[in-house]
Length: 221
Image (cartoon, rainbow, N blue to C red; front, side):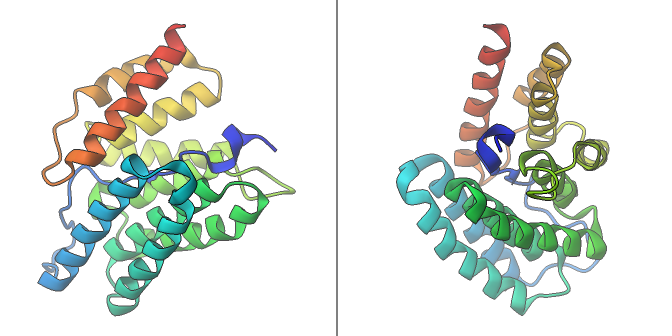
């Protein structure tokens, strides 16, 4: 039941951590309260993922998921809060680990699917990217819903929307390494390192670049 230690570093999901920038793809501008809410979730997520001791992350992500759900409840027809609730749930599942995380991962999957139904381009396709990550991190049948074909489908869609983004390139490379196509992953990792900085996402960018360097070192050793 390995699947890369079942959701380890799903923050991905993170996706996913997330989007190339906090910008809305929807035609209607976001309310200021939604902007502030998303910015707060992004900042708190990065602090937990990259600056909090590993043994304290699960509890911290669980607490943050409640705040994310409050924002989703307030703005149920916006894709962005669904994306971030999904990212935080995925990260909580990754920090928790084991079969007990599967129910949390299923909740994240539902949030991503809802976001895609609302606006698949929101946050530069982050729901597509994060859902793809879930599909290759979660064990497959009969334990979970993991599916490599679905993973590749969604990861490639995310790359098509945001081809220069740090997260889509990193996670597609990580998927290729998982599928034992290590050399094919290198160009995507190199492209991820060249991705433009995301204003207000300095902690997340620094942490993701460390992830990229570790994966490159793994390939080259």
